Length: 291
Image (cartoon, helix red, strand yellow):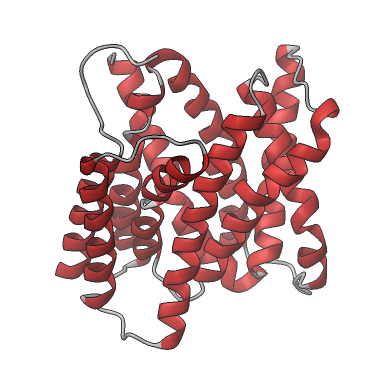
């Protein structure tokens, strides 16, 4: 991996880690559904303008029904669940829980497309469960029903990401990555629009909230997708997957730095165990070519 690609990978981890900061700031004010609507609509619009500038053929119109389903499963539902969870969780807590996505992805792939589930993956999955238990049990936040439900919402979001990724792999072969992103985000905007309209805020947001919405949509979604596609092309999917290890690290660091969130021993221990489990489940290798 070149220094440039390493820098892009780090930037991607920072953008996705920062998304939990933006969600934590904006979700309590705008409401989860309005926030998600702003996020996916603005990101889709920005990427569409970029595609027009490049003169790219996207192949979206012919598959619009599939993109609505994909947008619901892989964006609208998990984005909404995370935004709801962040009403109770700290940004760092949410970022760590979201790093379980590859664990659920491996489980869904094993059941749906018969991807082998090896002993190493089984050990990694068990470690992931332990990591979540340590994270919740040793959290500086008091264990309440609201906290437990928020944790379950975050984990369910990770499960939907796993389902969405396998669904996309099975049903959208040949669609350019940029077209896949725009189609998915546009579909998500349609799915979440009724809930967003019904719960729309009645007052204009403050400057920090407006900035968080724009940063979430344009930086942590639109720009992040562009970096992600660039890395998939240049270094391959396996090495790009290592961003999973960076996202919660940035989420924890930025949560403490920007929001003053408390980082306890349980947070660090849970983070370490979950990241180790992701490493095992995805059988990450750092040698050779993977594209």
